[in-house]
Length: 173
Image (tube, rainbow, N blue to C red; front, side, top):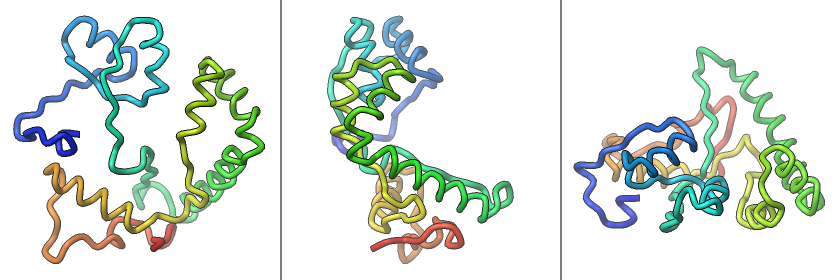
């Protein structure tokens, strides 16, 4: 966000507040100035007057990541999970399910108002194959992390293949 806004990044300080409840408490007791969280997750607190919405900063990368250590999860196990996830995502993301079943599930599970759920479903996109990673997305993420000082690019730049389990997923172009 600092890079997107052109702010200096050499003296940033972050406080860990653990969850949304800790964040809400900390902005109200003054120990945190502001926090970033997904809009529809925070909206119930904004609607209740417990937090204020001050702006929106889209991330330069996807919101979710699945990572597995090769010594703790076999390639076969990770592939199986990603195949199952792909099936579930495609079912959840179907046009038919988005009309009502998804709305009912989210409402029952999380208690969000139907109007907010429908608005959120209009904004969210899911990958149609969790076994594929767009190379451009991966390289853009690495570039942003380098600019933020979290990574140092090797001589010759990043090789996207070094950041994926080639026996599990494939890069798409």
